[in-house]
Length: 297
Image 1 (cartoon, one colour):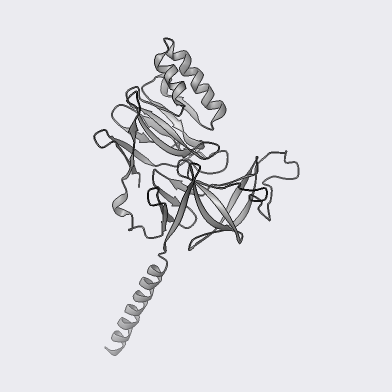
Image 2: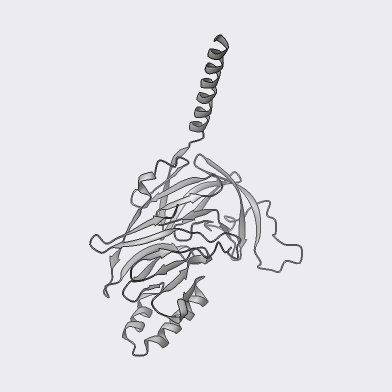
């Protein structure tokens, strides 16, 4: 009987230790962000040196912002290929990134134009997951803060994320995403009437609306997007009932009359090595002018 009591005490003690260890691994931190020329900026430490990072809410990337000549210099840089690597090709290195309480060791890519591309998180509108440390990030533009946590329960009631949108003069819902080669905030037109998602400037869209030969302008605009923005637009069976827009080769959006959903490209990997993310469905609320994003589990 005495041995059983001792065994029970030891077992309860071990359970307590395990629970304590699990709770000790839960880290939550709030980091201030700034909005600088339409950029979402967060201060971090890269290899012990302070850097200003652009947090891209559209394509879920961190990019080191170039503020002076040496701002993007990363010591210990290694090319991804051998000595035959051509000028301008992408190389990579491993860095130690200190973001608040979180330390991440992760590879980065060095792009032309002296920009550093750091692809390590999966994002939705307002909610992001850091892959390496399995932390959830919530970006609050109004409060200008970034909340990072490893506690999955903290945002359990916010699995449906809400983003407010406005209507332009043509009645199209317009939302702003931080996207594009320069990671600036851009307006995205969601044409629910014609089942299209268009990332074009308003003047080009006016040409499509007013032109008698709209298909000609449509092809011209799509060609322009392919040439100048790193996106590709695909039409299912050459039909306008469904259009997919792959954002930065990482995401895919599919629009239809009944539902708007984000679809996976069969886990295809982007040219920069990252997997294509699988997010969820998007629901429009025309009364409150909100867009609800329901991520897939």
